Image 1: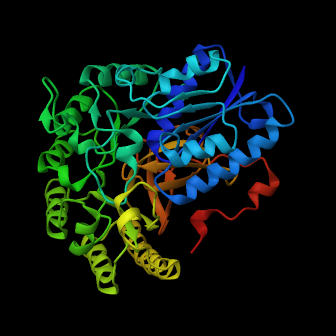
Image 2: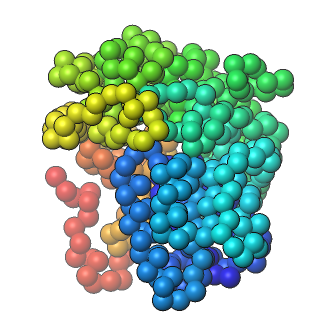
Amino acid sequence: MKATVITYGCQMNEYDTHLVESQLVSLGADLVPGVDEADFVLVNTCAVRGKPVDKVRSLLGQLRKVKAQRPLVVGMMGCLAQLEEGQQMARKFEVDVLLGPGSLLDIGQALESNERFWGLQFKDELHEHIPPAPSGKLQAHLTIMRGCDHHCTYCIVPTTRGPQVSRSPDDILRELDLQLAAGVQEVTLLGQNVNAYGVDQGARLAGYPSFADLLRLVGRSGVRRIKFTTSHPMNFTEDVAAAMAETPAVCEFVHLPVQSGSNRVLRRMAREYTREKYLQHIDEIRRHLPHAVLATDIIVGFPGETEEDFQETLSLYDEVGYDSAYMFIYSPRPGTPSYKHFADLPRELKTERLQRLIARQKEWSARRNAEKVGTVQEVLLRGDAHDAGFLEGHTRGNHPTVVPKAIGASGAGVYPVRIEHATPHMMYGRILDAFGEPLPEQPRLNPEAAAVTSPLQMA
């Protein structure tokens, strides 16, 4: 069998794709890069916003046409599969295999059944499963928990991924050991709400550390860099900021979604914290990590949001001075309380506010990135950039970074880089040697590439 997995959505979906791909390989499948070569296509779906759902709908329509021309097994997994919306889609487009986020280990049974298979249960064995480490990668994701016990009125995740379940710290560390043995240098701890790790159904699990203590445990493993996502402000504690400061491997990058700067909107969202409490967390982070890089999520145009509410979001953005943000217009999702009870705002109004927020974000990102010019940053380079002769990667603070290829550092690895130029969304620099001098650049063999203006020369 030749199989391919097409992934939409978050880092948790990327982790689940790796888990299922490892299962497919163990079953004897060959992984291929595209639909044309595959006889089994599995679509890993996201249901948080309407746009990725539309992409899945379009793809399944295309795959149904392919099935009419040649033998092809089509599967759908992930959050959308768990919803009635996705199940209706599966029936319409003749999907053969449907797996919810809690039944991913059923993939073998599904393929052996030789008939339409639906697996939508939340099974405990998934939490104990340890997938093999990714091969040949410096970065890896590591799930520490699944599900969520919060019920934000706009969010479908508690329905699609079920209640919160924390993985055993022993299983987490065993999986991490496999990743380190495979050469991983940066691990990102994943969960719908990592701050609540170890607290399920309102009670501390016997023998489970807090998230802050888990950071300290992982930091003692020998891994070079640790990141985590995502955090809910309701469960954030100052001890997390203290653990980050005490643990050199933990990167000084905090993604703390605020969603809105208006207390009135936060109440309608059921976010369980106030603007004031959120800003207290920011103060705690900066008290322990004065140079922390801060990112957030913001939903624009939530039902009932007034211009005054939106101005409070802009003022909070200025008060925090975020380095970066993921910004979305509100997307009503069937099955959520906000979809059922609140009237949506006009799309034109939501789009206009989003453009104003993006402009504010660019101002702050430009300012924050400009502060890094002249500094030396530790950059994990992943490999070739889009432009010939350059490598791309990211700093400990998650800043995308581009450098010229240099003699002695032409491939993936972690290097010191002096930042020489910055835009709102990118940094450019040069790799340094042990004496702090730029390494000599490699000559470009492609005459056309040699004519490309280096980003370092851009004003």
